[in-house]
Each structure stands twice: as C-alpha cells, then as structure tokens.
Image 1 (cartoon, helix red, strand yellow):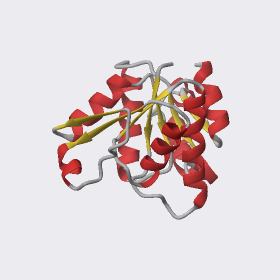
Image 2 (cartoon, rainbow, N blue to C red; image 1 turned 120 degrees about the vertical axis):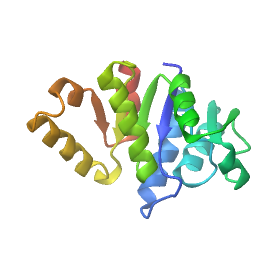
Image 3 (cartoon, rainbow, N blue to C red; image 1 turned 45 degrees about the horizontal axis):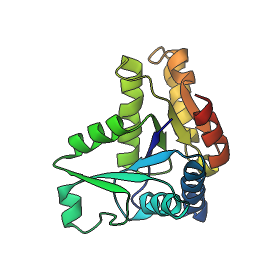
Length: 179
C-alpha cells in the first residue's frame, strides 16, 4: 500500500480525542512507510494528521480547489499540493492517488467523500479498502445505519463487511496493511 486517502474534519471537533487520533494515525502511517492523501488544508483534523505525518518523516499529498487556496486555507508545508478547479476534480484526483480510503470524524464533506468511495466500491469502480476510524464511537450511528440497510435489503452483507471499522489508529493501520 503506497498511500491512504484520509477524509476528516476541516474543524478539530469538540473532543481532544479526535486530534489525538489524527496525530496517531499520521504518525503510524508515516512509520509504516505509507503516504497520505488529504484535502490539502492546514486547518482542523486535516492539518493535524498532515503535520503529524510530516513530523514523522512521512509523505503527505494534498489536493485542494483554487477557491480554498484563495481563502488561505491551503497547507504550504506538504510534500506536494495539487491545486484543482473543482470539488469534483479534487475527489477524483484524491481517489486516483490513493490505495485505500479512511474517514475520521468530520462533517458533511467527510460523510459525502466516504459515501462516494463506498459507492464506487459497490459499483466495482475500484476495489480499494474503505475504513472508518471510529474515535470514541463517532461512527456508531453510521455503522448502525449500514447494518439497517443490510437488514432492509439495500446493501449486501458482503459490501457491509467490506467496510473496515476500528476504534484506534493502531488497529486500523494494522488492518489496512493486511488488506
């Protein structure tokens, strides 16, 4: 596995555990020699995971739309920063650069991004691992919804079981490296 795309909040969230998990995930991936693809921002959990990976000697590639660069939220210290025109181009570029997808705690953008990666997996557009880092039970409602969708016949059990869910960065990195 060369790179993992990490979707996460452009805000830090209210619990210190979120930033702690972002730091640990960035460090562990860097120590394993696995690069990170992010949304290219310097803010929120996105900035925390990037800074941690960089400090541990890792590679971090960002992909950011020009409109966000214009708002001065781009991370100037990344290994590489791709500036694109649209959010659609951003997501496609991030997907092309990554060998797996991880969602950390985040908001609507994070949900939309991991949902698209899961949809593409279901449709056979890619066969890359998709995972949730379930910090302090953040994703319990989403996992419950996935189980409900299986029970109601909208998602197959094999597609549900393809979603890696771990509570710690250590366990998540171990599972991804085993994929």
